[in-house]
Length: 271
Image 1: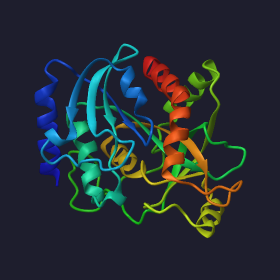
Image 2: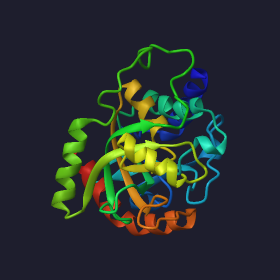
Image 3: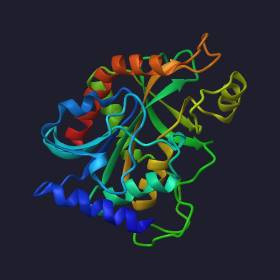
Image 4: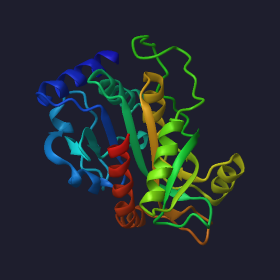
């Protein structure tokens, strides 16, 4: 599988010319608007990269955009890959390993998530301080390539503390409400039952989603710094009468995208 990562990296690098992005951004469901803010964009369709998984979910464009945000060169994934689409965790890991090979040092990962607390209202943002992996999958299973990271990596500070502090500072300066909490990943594609939601709350989760953890774990293993942000698009089942749907996710994510775009752009400018 590592050979696939090298192949993907070579194909991306061959199209970058003199561009040297060190920051990657992954955009979640309904959050692709940030990509429209990229200056001097170079667009690379996932389908043009041999071995690159194709996004099949509504709200995910399925392309890489390389360009400038706040004076920094970035590589943006406009649309991510999910386990529930049928992809193996290694397929997601290969993307992050490829990013590492082309020089990515920082990863900003965003997602649409369901709130587990009535005070964390849909339309607001949550800074991810830690996660719980209930997906049943781990992207690091399989042969280990020591070039990327150790066989048994620590996950103590998966979400880089200094980045969390900076994000809070930026949010305050932009008058953006930024909750902080624990993200719980479940495999999807079905939304959780009321009993599962209660279980997640007991375990200490603050928001539920179906992504982010594989990318984040792989990045941490590779030595890439990570900032994670959830756009809270709905209440989880049973919270304030929540009965989530994908349409609600996309609609509310679009409303939250203004604050997300402001937060990410200003964060990139200062990181």
